[in-house]
Image (cartoon, rainbow, N blue to C red; front, top):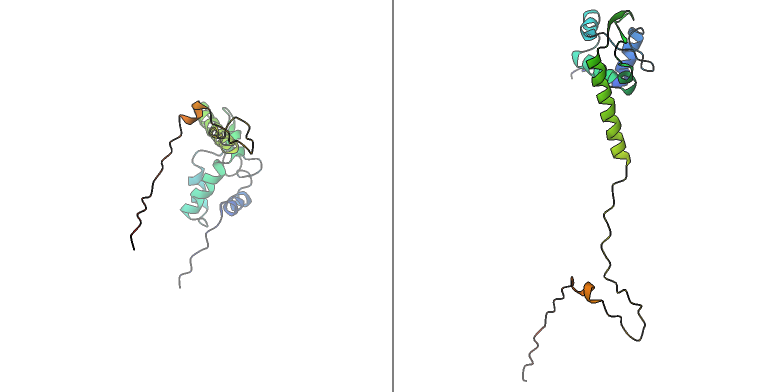
Length: 158
């Protein structure tokens, strides 16, 4: 029987990172991370598999609060919380594009789908009275096709 580690959820992985490096990882008030922080983590930590680390960083860096912090000129932080570079104009523009796309997608899913116009009713426009059936106006009859099948009945002689 293999002893495979249970797959950890992204929130558990982010909790692990924020406990281990509180200066860099904070889910409530994230700071822009240093470019190449994955290699720094891999150099000092071997508790996380490559897949788990990639998943945790991907989820953390794609949250709306993290993307909102990526503004041009904001300082990036390393594992200890020290400044390590700045967010460039291109990186800030990319983050804003991600946020706009996410917002547009959310708005599209929240809007009700436009309803198709109801088909015109074939009910007569005239009032019906019990003694006399109403006649359809000529313009309403133009789109109606009536097919009648007749059944031939033959009587056999006894």
